[in-house]
Each structure stands twice: as C-alpha cells, then as structure tokens.
Image (cartoon, rainbow over all chains, first blue to last red; front, side):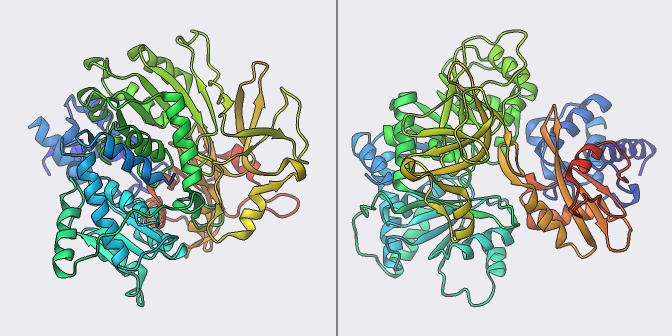
Length: 86
Length: 526
C-alpha cells in the first residue's frame, strides 16, 4: 500500500470504528470485514460515511457509486477514495 | 366487495391507463395487468389453491410482485409478503408458521429459502420466477408452465368480506415475528376512507415507497388501483438514497407521496431537493413514527404547496387517526404535531390501567373498535386474548398499547408506549425479539436491550450484554450474528458489556438503570 493509501486507510478505519463500532477492538475490524448487509453500515450510516469521505478527502461521491462494490470493506473504500484522488 | 374487485372494476373503466410503473420506466396498463393476474389466478387454482389458502410472496418489489399479489387475491387466497432482504431463516419461519399453500419467489432467492425450509418441504409448491422486474418474468414463467400443462380458465373468486386478504408479519416480543391477519373488510374500509379523504383521481400518481410487507403498502397499492391512477414503484435501493429519491419524485411527477417521516427527514437533509420541480405534488402523507418538527419545517420550506397529513395506526388497524397539518408551522414550535382525530369508520376510547375511561386531558391507552380492526394474530390465542378487551355492552376493543392524551380541541397527542415496542425508521421493533436473538449466541449469558432517544435518528438501540466467560465479544461478530437472524433495522447500534446485568430487588433485570447508564461509556465497557 502506498504511503498515501495507508493514510487514507487509517482515517477511514478510525472513522468507522468511532462512528459505527464504538467500543470495538480495532484489530477486529480487518480490511476485508464486510460492512454492508451485516448491519455495520446501514443506509443512514452509509450517508454519514459518504459525507465524511467528501469532506475529509475533498471528493464527490455520485449516487450510483454508493454501493457495496465501492463501500463494502475498508479496503474497498480505500481503493475507491484513492482512485478518486488519483 | 372483495379488495381485488376494486382493481377489476378500475381495469374495465380505465383499460389503457398505466396501472404500475417501475423506476426504469417499464410500465403495465390496467388491461395488461388484469390479463396477467387472471392468468396467474388460473395457474394457482390449477395447482389446487382454494379460498382461505395462504400464498407466500418472496420477491423484490416489481410489476411482477404486484401482479402476484393481485393474482393471489383473485384466486381467493390471502397473500403473505416477506422482506426479500430479511434473513431467509426468518422468512422460512413465517411461511411455515402460517402454513402457506405455495410460495412465489425468484431464482436468486430460491436456493437459500429451500435450504431454510428444510427436508420434507417438497409438498409445498415453490413457484420460481427467473427474476422480478418489468412483469415479463412472470409472463414468461406462466407461458412456460401453461405450455407444459394448460390451466382451465376460471373466474375471480368472490371472497367473503371476512376472508383473509393478507397476513403481515411484525416484530413479536417473544422472539418470533407474529402474523397480523387482515380481511378484505379490514382493508376495504381503509381504502374507502382514503378515497373519501384524499379524493384520488385517475390522473394521480402515487408513490410506492414502503416494501410490501409493511402496512403502508396497503394505501400505496389499493388506493390508486381502485381509481384508475398510477402506482410508481420505488426500487429498494433508491428508497434509501435521498438524492435519487428527490430526483424521482420530480421526474415521475408524483402527485401523492406516502412514507415514514425518517425518509422525509433524510430527503430534507441529504436530498438536494432545491434542484427539482415538485409542482405536481399535491399530498404528502406520513405515518409510522413521530416526525421531528425541525425536519418537518425544513421540508415544508422546500415543498410549501402540498397538503400534509400525519396518519397514525398500528398494522392491526391500519390508519385509525389522522391530522392535517396547518399551512404554516410556527417558528417557535418544537412539539410534534398531534395524531389527530379518530377516522369516521372507527371508534376510539382512552382508558386508564383498570379499563375506566379517562377525562379529556388525562393520559391513557387508546382503544380502537370498528370494521378495520384485524381478526387477530395467526395462531397466537394467548396474544389475541391479551390484545382484545371485552367491555360488555360497549363491545370488543383492540388495545393499541399506545398512550395518548385528548387535547381540548379534540385532537389526540401521542405520548409513548405501554410496553417495550419501539419504532425505528417507522418499523416496529420489539426489544424482546432482539434479546431473544442475542440469547441464541453461545457466549451470551444475559442480554437486555434498551432504546435511547436520539435527535438525529429518533432512537438508537443499545444492547447490554454479560458473557459466560466474562470476556467481551467482538461487536462486529455480534452484528454479523444478528444480521443472520434479524432484519437490518433491528440490529443494535451500540453494545455495552457488563460482568453481570444490574438487577432490581426482585431479581429482575433493572432496565431503568440500564437506560440511564447507556451511552455514558464510550468504550463500550460499563
């Protein structure tokens, strides 16, 4: 993972832990933990996550991009944000 | 007249009108939908379906699923719609619980359902459409089946008004969903009330936002289809996406919108509504939970033209009180609006704990009586005993479990619940059902679930847990475990772990203490 990607990854992971998994052991949230359809990222949480990504990284997330292909895991989200920035 | 004859009559009056349109633009006219549903009726009757049977509907929302619902009613059976996104184990439980005669599903959902239904389920026909969307899948499936074994043409069954039309499963406090049995009479008096109150015309375009297993869908489906109007299906994914939803209401030129307040709140916050033209919209209806005034005010600012109605009622009665909002909301108002007055097809009474009627201005439980009240819960005699109260000459009443106050102007104000049921995004959630799920986890020794008020989301659900080995369980693991047994909106937002749960002097779990403790600890360890 490139240094920039590592930073993006850590910010995303930290946000998800703080907002949606308060109290969770950070090691339990792995890069490939499924977030959508397991109740961790529900529809409202997804909107909050998108608002965070837009504000934190200065990107714009289109409605059709807010799906499980881009947002299902920390790795997916990192890849998605990196591609927007790249 | 049975519910489906409202549609049949509208189809003969308005054959060329569009009955149902999907978001993609695919639509079906009244004539086409009447033909398709009659062919399904014939097929069902050929399979041995008779009046009084139940048919499970396990499909994504589509023209196909609307047609399956109407075809089922035409065959004289009742439909049992389930959430296509709920765990298959829950849906299989529902189908077994009310002994459905057959199940209509789609190829993507069938394998898991079959696995959950288990061995020995071959006696229950599963009719598997290749997909759901556009109506073509159902038509293709019927064509194929008919080519192999043609069905004789029959007539739509004149169901008795007391025959069941549908069973809607809601959260049950014992850990299992319970089936609310609703008859043609129940549905019909509600639909007639909608006709009188909202005066639909054939040019209207109704939103269908709620999923079909949710009671808001009854207004969505049957009111337009009685009047030759158009039902515009909102896809399951769009339904949760405020920007797509905001655009859809404008582009489809919807005239009547009906949803929970949660969705309308999301629309105002995230929908970028100012970018669209909503001049067609004439009615905004909401139900299912309290609408925070701050969001309602914001909505009325963007949509000043429509009339707004707050509709109240549990699944067991559908809407039983209603309130039309004034044209403007005072700047300093923070109290939610009343639930209004009892609908004319109902009678209401507010009683104290002993069953005695309270004075105006005094809090009490709302009892409801009238032709819309459900027949009862499927196969739950004890619950039926508890939920109905016989007041001698005054007759039998349904206990809503909701505490209300009658104001000086005659409007009722909702105060809260008598029991442990809460509303999350408009859905009923029995906290006991979540506890029952948590107790199935092998490491959980004690579990207690409370709802915490939350300004942004209405409520947040917090689970308090003590484990057998005193070690915490991963919250991710617990959420994943819950998601295999419960719909997503049931899954607790917060988890707190305790060595043991606090108890009252009678050794019961001290919910009051947990309620006050919840949210005070950010690290999840109480």
